[in-house]
Amino acid sequence: MNLLLDDIVNDYANMINAFRLSTKNQLLTTIVRLNLTCVKTIDELLSKKFIYIDNARLPVTEYLASTEVLICSKCFQIGHFRSTCKSLLEYCKLCGIGIDDVKQHKDVCNSKQCCVICSGDHNLNDYRCPDINLIVLY
Image (cartoon, rainbow, N blue to C red; front, top):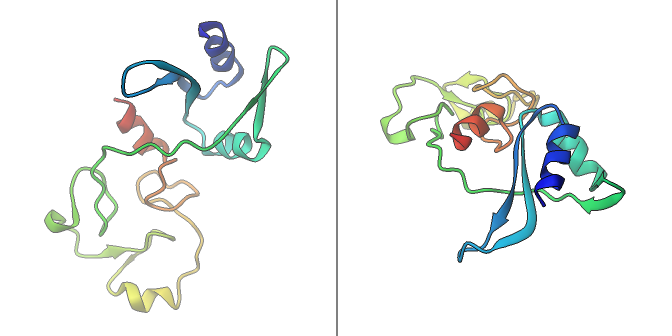
């Protein structure tokens, strides 16, 4: 299995790490979790549904890990909750624009995704945000 992990890491330059998941009893499974920094690569892998390593066709599925990162639901910054947020504005979780009234903004939102945290092309609370993933890893 370690050779397989090495091959996967070598094939994807933006791979942070790859490791086998284990059960709650610490028994290793055949499931491999890949941590990537590029949202584009993640989307490509998910759309292909398979990767090929050493002539083996391996299925790819989305892994939704529970994050242990505090993300404010008002300003979407990392490290605090809404109850302690000092931001004067609330931010649209889709387009990332700071606004006074979220309900009013829904009618005029351009729906173009933009992350406040990394300026990436995804929702503000998307688990694929590279900045959030870096925090989760460490």
